[in-house]
Amino acid sequence: MNKNKLGPTMPKRKVIISCAVTGSIHTPSMSPYLPVTAEEISQAALEAAQAGAAIVHLHTRDPKDGRPSQDPALYEPFLKKINASSDVIINITTGGSTAMPVEERIRPAMEFQPELASLNMGSMNFATFPMLQRFTEFEHAWERDYLENSRDVIFKNTFKDIEHILSEGGRNGTRFEYECYDIGHLYSLSHFFREGLATAPLLIQSVMGILGGIGTHPEDLAHMRRTADRLFGDAYEWSVVGAGRHQMPLATLVAAQGGHVRVGLEDSLWLGPGQLANSSAQQVIQIRKILEGLGLEVATPDEAREMLKLKGRGNVGF
Image 1 (cartoon, rainbow, N blue to C red):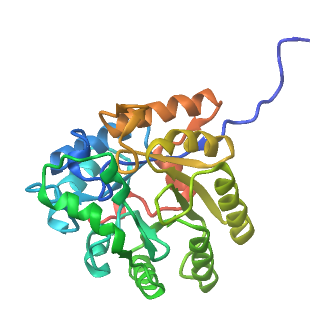
Image 2 (cartoon, rainbow, N blue to C red):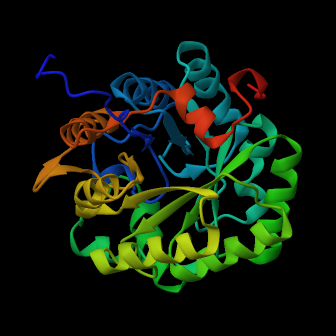
């Protein structure tokens, strides 16, 4: 008998890395590495995919001044380039910007019919004004006002809004990343799940560390997970994104507890204390090393498609 033979081993658990390569939360002046043009966004997405991201979460900006935009004409060039060059799953935002009405925010997802789109699960105070304590110089006039105005802006996502997006997106075969910024958002999702508008497997993205939503303490994380388990049982896949400096610590903790992870410059500009990440791909590489160090395996796009029951990249509108 070979004493060195240990017998059958358990397969490694697959972890989906999602990467938010650019977004509306941070203004371009905060980092020189935030992609703005279509070429920069497509390059950032492809680099993140090459580094190991199975999903890229995409916003866009007006290249003239970096202002958040949901103009489908600005999306089309980079959507086509990414889809032609990679098998990565493309996730289009329906969040856009807190300053946009819902009909404007959902235009790209409705027109391009992606495999996956983000969907915020409740109205909230989405406060970014504390960034003004850390950033004082801005390239564009709108940026300071954008942050300051978040003191008095409600990010509107009513039940009517959510129902409309679920109904319209569902007709296109688009599935959703349900962004839950607080415990109540899980209960809102549970309502739509019971009504049959949200269907399993649900991709629940717990978004932690935004002022106005849940915090980043491990007890907050545990509460989110316990509540989701109680409401959805085995009908969901759990992922977490931590804002700012909490990105990597929370991703590590979540992965160790059986979840998936999201990184990227939309959510955090940093690679480490005082060190700006020079790309979203750099953050993907960092979290991939952590996952593999934990004995986990990074899911490929096709493996993520199977886990999330997506319609496939050949069935999108771009």
